[in-house]
Image (cartoon, rainbow, N blue to C red):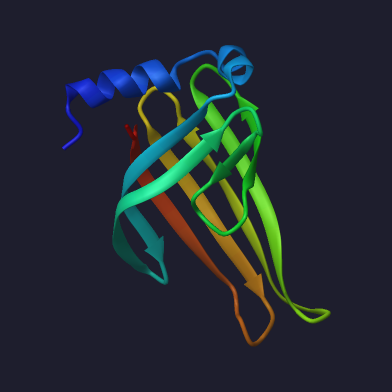
Length: 135
């Protein structure tokens, strides 16, 4: 589905040195497909949008909060984040997201873990995606 033109564009956009991308204030908008494993089942994913903002050092698209980019090298963007869901002063759940995106191949691996109170419960979801830049 992602042809050689997209592969070339992915390589050009995702392999740009991090210092050069940061200086240009560029967001990488990615369209991803693949699968999510959760509750001992796998679910297909298509048209999932991810935004990598190297200037703001954030990755969005996996949850309602932005994950922080922890490091970037020539091949990989590593990110993680945490958020809390409250009801008044009561903590209902803590959400963690951690993952990486290969800047050369477009492969993204992400884990979202929810640690909830008795009402919410706890769970983990594992994303294995192949991403390409959007136009």
